Length: 394
Image (cartoon, rainbow, N blue to C red; front, side):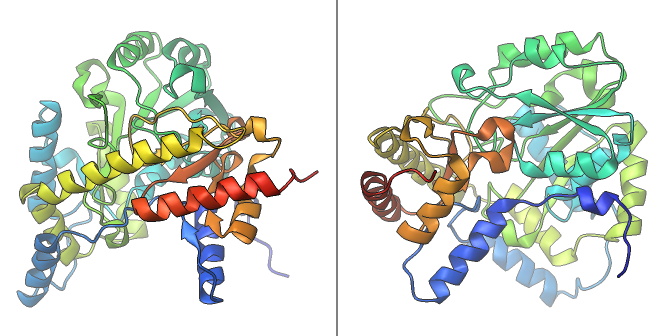
């Protein structure tokens, strides 16, 4: 038997994809499965973006691009950053990435090693912890609590920083909770981080424009005092319904951009050329499709919350961002993962159990409302019938 290094025994997965695979299998077997599990907009990429990629191919853009991305694509990212945050970013500090995860991979790899500690949100995107454990660093969960509106607490976060802390990972608007951290809390966190100048920050802002009820995302880029140690993750997947294009970007400080560029050279070489032209069209082109998508998500958000709060034993905080609800199912008597599994197998509704996002996810399930209102209603009817007719697993 071949022996691999121990790090590969520590690496985890993203169970939402396992749920998707099982839901697809059940669908292929003829079952009517309603998928509220995967974090993927159910809209097509806007036509002008698709046409930009086609036009790039027709014009012969078939070769390698620079490891950090085409200058024109990086300049487009700078324009968007200026428009949304009011801050100036040099294209020399921008990396075009094959999705959002490579930024997590690179940042955690830079700072994670045995003896180091990395703070990450719990419940949070599962790849954070997976990659931390892969590097041999100690994962330190930052509690994301329902009673705090699923926003992080600056005071609690700062209390977890030690002389071994190398990296702090933040995410707002957040997956899986839909929480948005208020600016006042971010102000406190940034002020407190002045005591810890050797701690780098990875701010996952992939859902930056996906907010509701007047909430406004506060980018960490607007704090000049931490720019020399701040990495910002963003991308095209969510805002422009481009998940399959594998297009992300990140903004790095001067001291780290060279490292991530070399990692790209060694790992993925570059991001494909036609997708980068599509990315420019997404940023600079009309945004009406984005607005329509967000209007649909807002309607679905309200529907999911209303229907979830009517379920026996379930309560659901109204999400303020992204396209996820994180209902509390503790009073149903079910544990989260057995409930998610039973809903898929028996009711043919795919959701993701809260523990797949961290230990503090027990008692919750994640519902993605990236599905139609008709299907959300049908799914909630099935969940209501299931909870009425089935006792919790022992």
